[in-house]
Image 1 (tube, one colour):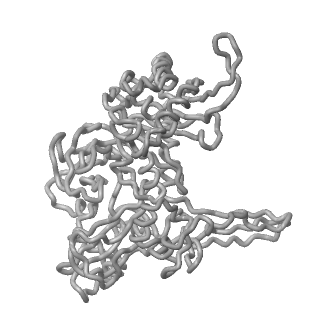
Image 2: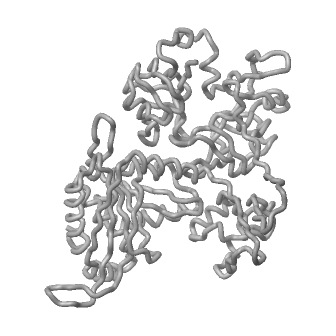
Image 3: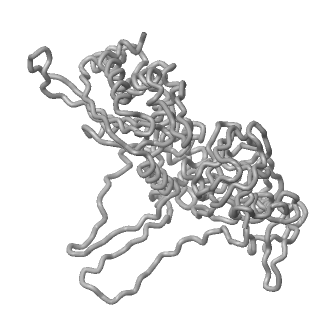
Length: 537
């Protein structure tokens, strides 16, 4: 059966989208995960991935044209399938395939006809807040049932595969029903809430809501208990679940922190990691006084879980949306891009002296990582082949340089992007990286701050790691792994003398970056890092 693809909502403020480029044409075979088109939103130009398989039968919006969210974008189905009914609007398929809240499918014991919902009632579904989002988790409801909702009010904070984002209401009325409790997850387009006139009975709509005949709402996972015959030293399984209570940690198994908006803002301003704060508010929520009274010594000492001798034991932690996305994207990169690795070791004596002198300027402090970001950006400008992207029929050589900087967070890894890094000073790069790292830890990075990278840097030197390899952050063609600066004897002008070196490993996509091309880039990079004053010219 043909599937109607509507213009997706790729950002929380997007109201219409423009097709920048179609990457498939009518008649092409489509696999799940294929990139259908590049769509320009109010924030960025983003790739739109297909969640269906079949043949592209119809394109509803040509390149350069603009249409509203939820309007017909394309139709995918079986080759030769008749879609005239869909194009003429003679069926309700389009309505069942979109977020259009004018009708929902209501099934009863006696029939399954499409019924009009009451006047003024709006069904709000789980939005697609990123181009790769497949499901979302309600982190916090900022409105409760019975509250009046105005257009523009923030209904909830929703955790996607990339960040926790505020979800704005585009309707006015009374919040009549909440489809997901805090901490629960559901697929995109599942029932999130119902808004309408106060006192309206929406119980039947909430109970029977489905899209395309398939219930989207996911039931909360229940603890599994397996009964088996007794065995010696049987492993004891514990499922980690969120259970906030006063004066205990308010971070759940997915790394989500329960805190008031004011507490989050205060923590961000003070550089406090909310996962280290104990909440004393309602249901263990972190509130203003918890931030004001927080001291590092209150963190306590982390000790391992007590397990009796001779007894096997393990905990199970449900995969967060971010962890699922990391697994999917890295596996795709590793098995689609032919990786190879180039290893170098640079003399860091001049870099150490340069940094010490630079930081002697009042109110100035840069890190070695800031220097590497700047050096890579300048070298990439001279080697666009490394600053490229692979497509099946072409390579895109980027003349702008956006450096992604990998930042570790409790859920895994995020990559905020320093835009036009080659044009920024070392101080500007340092300030941007510091700001993004703080936002990443508090899940406050926006989509715009995580999109558009042309090259990525991952640094584990601060953990004492001397060298390592990374998986390419697609659609980039390369990623730089930065190790620690090591003091050791080195040979200079035929003499063994004390020195400082740093190892770097660049993973390259062989489809776009040949070995000689990568080597030439590293030679240019060597000149900047070993003689950092040249970065100021």
